[in-house]
Amino acid sequence: MRVNSTARFAPQTRDESNTNTHGVQMKTLIVSVSAVLLAGSAILVNAADDAAAESLMKKSGCFKCHSVDKKKDGPAYHEVATKHKGKPDAEQELYKHLTTQPMVKIEGKEEKHAKLKTDDDAQIKNVIQYILSR
Amino acid sequence: MLRTIWGAMRARYPSRRQAIVMVSVLVLVLLMVGAGLVVAGAAGLAWTETLGFCTGCHEMRDNVYKEYKDTIHDKNRAGVRAICSDCHVPREPGPLILRKMQATFEVIGHLRGVINTREKFLAKREELAHHVWKRMKETDSLECRNCHDAQHMDPSLQSAGAQAKHKLMQTQGKTCIDCHYGIAHDEPKGPTPEELYPNIKVQRWKERPSDAPAT
Image 1 (cartoon, rainbow over the protein chains, first blue to last red):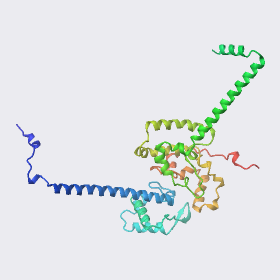
Image 2 (cartoon, each protein chain N blue to C red):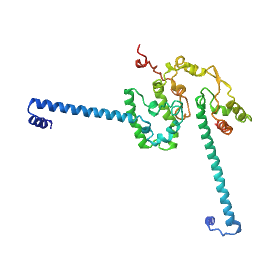
Image 3 (cartoon, rainbow over the protein chains, first blue to last red):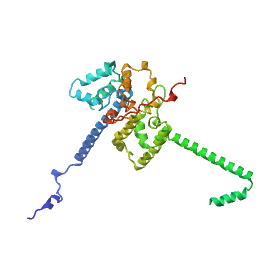
Image 4 (cartoon, chains in turn brown, green):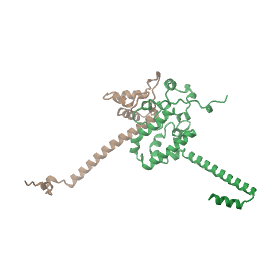
């Protein structure tokens, strides 16, 4: 049985159905490159936010009582994120927690929860997003 | 060969007085060379204790040093610092020399490139931290106690929670590293020092006689 398998590899005749004009080629190039850059920058922006959040949290002493995955004096951030998953008021709750210094219990003794060392709302919200995404 | 030298010396300096002078000169020279070697050795050891020495390797400079920067042991109100050797090298002479000999393996590791990229370092972070935690557990956090003396902590300057937690050193036999881990460098994922090494018997440190005031 003779199968013309080489037909698939024969050079196609080019006509309007299988060619793009130069303009269309250029547009696709621009769109695809922008898409890649946008996606890349989104990832980079997330990375920068993480780094900024961690830096502020380190400065504010959060990691003295909290870890991402371990239980210390305070709950692990992974636990916090799981607890608040899908809750619509999660961000609000955490914002209150980080700015109003509620009383917390450490080894049976009550003391004020520490505040973030910043007055910038955007930075506080960034930290909240960091915690909720652990 | 020694016999010919001996013969030559006896021929050159036949009289007893000359011999005594030559021997004393020789002994003096040997003593000075010995002293010079001891001083050079001590200076070399001191050099290996400096921050510049440790951060000479890019593995340290780009990873753990960057994490240590701006932590409380690096920068604080009073400017009192704990650098690499303060926490990672014991001060007692015996353990110090032992640790320095161990450090030759780190040179081999550097030459082999065990953690010479960021990715390799991140992959090995847990293991490296566990080495330090294990040592701290075994020595009752010896290097912490080079500067922090639990007997001389002022409770009035600590929060009520902190005071209660520090009492656990007596009531539950905890050591510094059980709670104070991940403070100078980023905390690795995984179990805590307590969970990792639950069976290590902490050798309770006895107060050194030199730490007590002369009565």
